[in-house]
Image 1 (cartoon, rainbow, N blue to C red):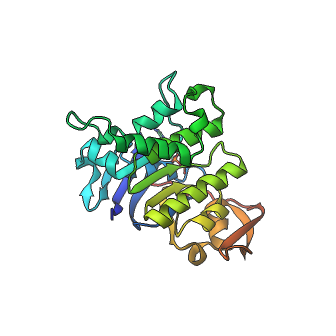
Image 2: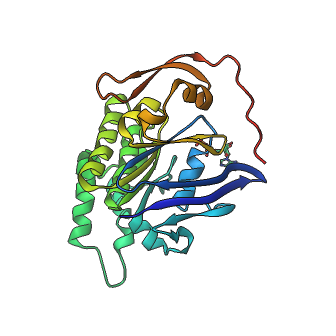
Image 3: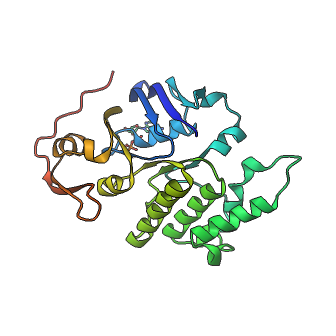
Length: 270
Ligand code: ADP
């Protein structure tokens, strides 16, 4: 089981720190949600964990190995990444995109196999895209396109999935469908899932572990019912709220009341 870790991780852009000395371990076989206000560093952290971005200082480790030392195929067989606004070449069809997910399994001696074919069909079926498989991505709605990207990551068949706001562009039914799918992949196949989520209540329902970021630092980390409090929401999101147990799941349910009236200025990170 792969273990993903950040060690003394700092990221600065033009000398301004946006992640500051983070140490954390992503529990394997569990669902972890990254939450926090806009600009708190969620996307940056996910990008560093997926090696899309090099840290200024410190490192991301996979099974105690620096991810910067892994070959790109080794990495792609371990981590599937769905960035926030993925870009595909013009004219690409859904099936062609999903096929790209099998790239880490190809080599000069291992050509396209039945297993590759099977994984592509399975990913298209799971995301309900079989009927759209031959359509060009740019002809799809935002939600359909998002599902196509998720299908590509699923075809990659990695033990760990990193997803930046996987429910963006999706209507409520498709949001629930994708989150249920990720939940099932975790429950039945033990996949480790790390996702940035905007909706705190969805995070509380679906994640076993929540990492709350604020101004590039970890404000809190732990199980939803242990860490999500009215005080935490006030500090992390500048919102006054009431937390009640979710009548369906018993997990914390945040009822926003109003924006916090006096928003304290964030101390600049140095
Ligand atoms: P979040 O995902 O929590 O909204 P981000 O990780 O996207 O936050 O951004 C954290 C901070 O880093 C923001 O202030 C953002 O403007 C800044 N930032 C992110 N990427 C870059 C970049 N490539 N260049 C400069 N600043 C960046």
